[in-house]
Image (cartoon, rainbow, N blue to C red; front, side, top):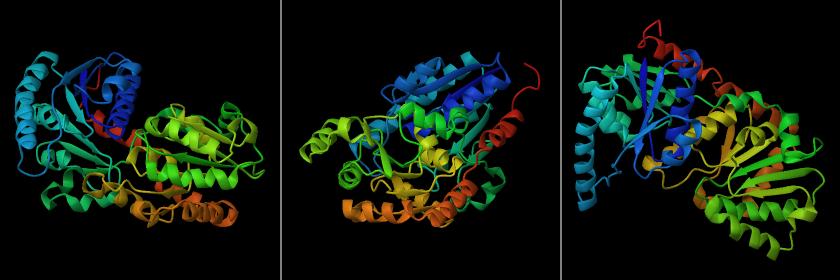
Length: 374
């Protein structure tokens, strides 16, 4: 049995593909997995760490207007289509699973053209361009948000199934006491988890600086904030300039990146974050309320639609990036954090919005396209 996973560019495409691949290998240990990604994408760092063999193609995203870059990207995609056909014939998979990103278009398209079973997973409330272009050619499309359905043609509705987004098993396995112990935090304090994004988000970091300043030394609160690699040094420097010593305050942890997200989510009482689908799936699976700040330059503004889907269910509140200030964020955090009844209600709504069983539903779909025996 052989399966190809393809998805690239950002962690939002890569992590769901990895989670699906790991679930397949757990069910069918002898199954061969091949991950197909881009030459320069983040997958080149992430995928080898989990042990999947990789093939890479030289593809890139294209501007949505007539330009030299768009022509060049289209030419690369066309070349990759034929290279993908060759790879598919050599590897001979029973199933190709795409999770988005521009590498999916030629790879999944080539698989469909060869009559290989194909499956897409769409993470966002607004489907990405690649998945919309492929929708008519694939066998099945798994959705994270029910809101996504309206963006597909009526004739494609029978292909759609709302499964939720698969999350890493460790997210649900780590308990609060383990998370607190990992970060050496107090069980008596409320924990704010701030996420500036893998590349850093200056607006969130600026606002969280104010929040850290207001809560520094507060006996009721502790903070874990991931600044992103690019914002880490500046954030530390500005804390020092504000007279905040991380070593002496004891209630603020600043890190460039949270590789151990399962421990951070386990001890969090409130999240302040961007609205990437992968993080929202993990946050809601844990039943955590959030203050969400959509990335304003996301393709087709999909992060705002992701956030609104949770806000409409009472699972989170939203601040638009252009309206974000330290004072406003602090006021909203304080109002939510110290109102246990309202926060508990929002946590319940978050848990209801989350789909901890997403992987089981996706695996039920996958099983239909793989041999019963391996």
